[in-house]
Length: 568
Image 1 (spheres, rainbow, N blue to C red):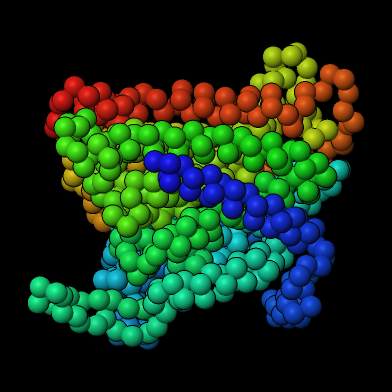
Image 2 (spheres, rainbow, N blue to C red):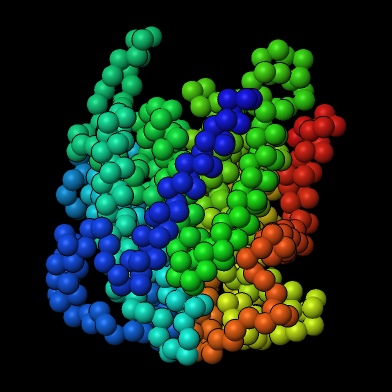
């Protein structure tokens, strides 16, 4: 246990130490200033604008910015869908894989375009190398770039003064990929290859095991896709078992670095926010709120897993090892709990253990992290603008308590901003509770549920939390690859991505047009411990009021039943 706690502390320290300078770099990048690689990449950037007919100096109103996001994402969806349906006719398919079914192609295309990377398929048995590289890996870059670009625009709206534009989407997207995601991914890819992750175009190879059996071992261009799936908080695995596969996650060092990569850019956006609004205390306050929620979730998950199942308490191994079902022995309980917390705090979705095998409360924490909208660091960009929606609601409630018009960063938060933030908040209940309720009663949907009783409900809740929260991780026992779930979860992913983006861009556009007033003696400070506490409380209360009844029938009921010795 002491070793696990030391690693948790080391992990938090490394993420913070790397995120701070990266956040300052991002702020400079999105404010148009020169950055480290400008001399090398500026000609490439300008050449792209010239070829695409983009005027880099032309800003966009929030409505035009939102339309650009939607049009680009629609084009990406159409291209990827066609690629998956025509996979058998395209090159780099040494295994001879056939085309994906219409419903699976729809689900997969939506999944990767929305930065969800939910996988209702086994990568090594379904996707050609062309689909992996030209389809999925490309979307890992551009979907992450869309989230980063939108966040940059929203942050500009929060600190702009009497402006009608939020920047240019095409410029923000290009700079996000060219100056951030590509360089970091190259470094990460080289590191992973060094650690033993394959990066080749070789077909699957046959091997003879120690027992004399024959085993097929898949190969492929894995390292490059794994690098961007972690850095871009995508999470889609090259192999079906994701980062539990030794080829994807071969060593303890690779495991640690991949976990750092998951939270690196989302954490950096907090410090970017502080620098761009010219008050680093604001960014630190948001980072602190995210950190408190993250540590609370980690404590619940780790505590539950290290305690294990009381039914096995008499076994000496269980008393020392905790719950090892579904976990890699080489990682153990500590690394599994930390990864599960990090991947669901971010909208990443990769796993190094099977969440379906977690203890009831150990699974509850990751589930709740997704249900509150994955604002505890969240996806690249999407985590920060999701948290800013809660900031708007928090200052509104604080204003009600003190009896004055709420303000944030010198701007009055009025009915329009609050209503739009509420619309964004309601996305998760509609997707999780609405679509989840249908899945819990329709026979065509229940065929995917593996387990009876509360755990079966948890499988449904987790699946639709993951889809609507654009996370992509899964309870391993949920059989998602059926037409009903492929279609409905695709709809949930679209809701979770774009019905969140558009209202938050509208909030930013509204704030950008306002005048700023200097702080007075009655202004509620939004950078101290009191604000952090209130922000955390608002997130927990709203999340609890919304999802507690469903959680009480799922993981909480399962925990009570387990303690009573009842099985299903």
